[in-house]
Length: 198
Image (cartoon, rainbow, N blue to C red; front, side):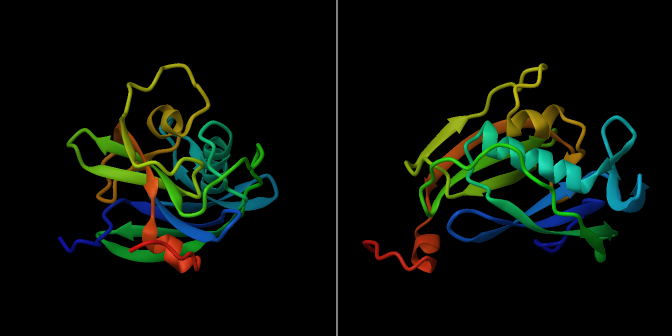
């Protein structure tokens, strides 16, 4: 399999803004995306873990709101959500989802710092959700914990226990929170025009 081939049934490319710059993330889902009508609004949805349609816009709004509130990620706004299906590894553009309004407020941040959530499937394949401008720049890896059954408002709870069918790039459902890593991205700092020691 080519290293960049996406075998998850669908995925979303999310463009979001921090107080410093725009960033891109990719989220993979365990069912194909389809167009649905919710009230008077046309949306794109995947099949949630409960078997019902789950709005991609709502999933992303919930995820990034949690990142902002519980995990202190300085997400200012969601700027674009491009939805794709990936049947047999062939990527097909489905449409552009509505940009959700986020809850919570933007706190302190450190430009070029990152916080990376690492999740794993049952066969140990991993996927990552990275937040830039995280308020902690010290290089550190914290082992993941067993995510509680009761919703604690965090990103890791939503990835593992929420209704959104998150998967790895190869389409395997995520089942464990492996680690949370923080650090400082020197290449990103240079792109911001910061002068740093080599």
